[in-house]
Image (cartoon, rainbow, N blue to C red):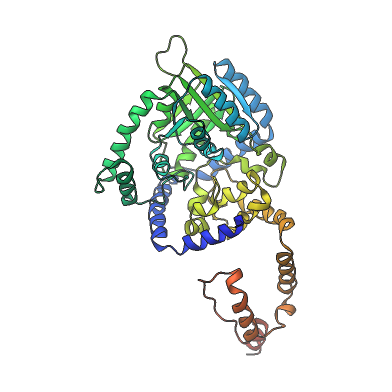
Length: 456
């Protein structure tokens, strides 16, 4: 089955799942309430967004300069900086390092880029245990699933779903409260942190001027993953660059306010390299991977270049009416929602995944809530235009006929209301779906009714 048919099938199934939609709407509504309050803390939110957008525009315009600066400064701090052209390149380099370090188990904090390269899967094939230490990531890992949401990996699960899951895998009591379930995971992971041979984190921001890695989190697991093991590995996309730590007082609160509604995420970490001789804590070795994985291709494409400004706050997902109804898994990609619909076709095979750019009503809410002012609707339209080259002959013919009819009022009025309703009933299931009921066309056209109204 093709990816587009799988998408349609999954989207139809999920959107009709009332229980699933109830869980998503409940969990997302709590975030929506918190985000509204979080944004009210700003005296001038529009100015903050414009400033952040301008900074990211500058970084995009001078990306090579900032990347080289980061590499030089991070190396001066004692870190090792490695470049990976794609996921295969990354896995090969990382596997060689872990083998040389005799790594048998590593702990890992939440990172979408590691999901992008399917790190856990590749490590498992090499006999290395990779333990997710973010609570949400841990839950979906135990369930054998992928993250459902950029910020909240287990958003699709209720408390009872999690209790039942833990009962199945760890024989815990099904009646445990949310606090008790969290406590169980905390105790289990403490032992993992202590015994891990390596720790892996992503990066929310890479500070070029200082060569520092900025990681923000709510549970402390990233700090433990980076500081307990003797080896700290950072995997980050090349678009994570900002000029320096001076911009963090702007970006960190924007990320928190738009992602979870917090004034600031609980733990805001800055990693400058491995521990120095006079320091007691920290890793003995720090390796930073800068991953391309088709980001350079996106950078060269001026129509979607600004998608690299994304700071992964998840605000566009929470605002999107399509995402709210079809869920994160229907996209079958690491990045879902509006930003995923823009990026994923370019990260993957555009011919197979360009249908995601049509998974949008183009209402513009995603663009409105974006903290760095990414023109998402324009990019979705650009992707749709590029997708025309991959349309089937039937789709091209249908589009051509519809364009000719809908671009002319005279053509639209050729057929009467009854015949239009009959034709629509024939093609409705293919183009609109079986579950949606449509009103019949009026017997008289709008023009006829208007003329009659004017004569009155």
